[in-house]
Length: 250
Image (tube, rainbow, N blue to C red; front, side, top):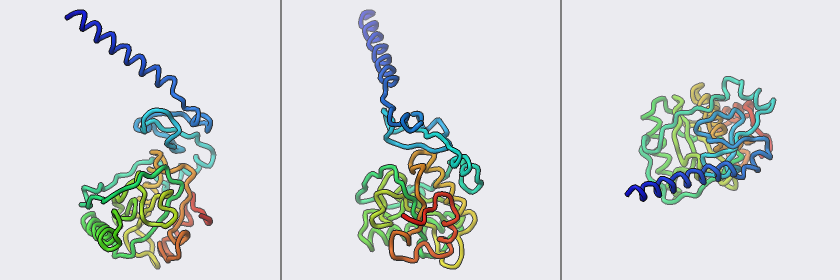
């Protein structure tokens, strides 16, 4: 009995030593070549943001990029959501239907902003009702596998999970596989979303960058820049053009 215990203990120690040695010898050269450091993004704040797929190990090990002068200037802006924190109303919380299929999304280099061309909302329950209606239209009316947007934002500042960070959306032809689509709930042709909604838009983007779900060098676009449409409405588009990372050319 004692011999068996000693054998088990010896094997366990050997396993942990091997695992530690393997991690120590992990090939993180793709990250270090960019001046970054591989770390567990769940426990480390990275001001410049993370990039996935540059570090060995599981998906929690991500490349913390170095912060240059531009990054420091951007992160100091109060509306940029520089803390990288965002509270999101999950699919189960707003009563989403299950998708019929999904496609993984690699780290996107674009963020595309839309408006839903619906009425606005100022409470979680009212916004959730609109989001459910949009999902029904997209799935039943359009025959899509799920709601088209990755996220939606209500007038009270609530952020609703659509397809989320890691699934290809259906919101911008030719850009779906390389973008996050964020829809502001309402119609913003002649008026802006509320200050709370605009703040949540900025915080959501910053949150995505800090978690490595959006490239730190992303380009911010309005839907009209990639498709012949009035979306996201002239007033909202004018606002988008004032934000960091807005790109006049897709």
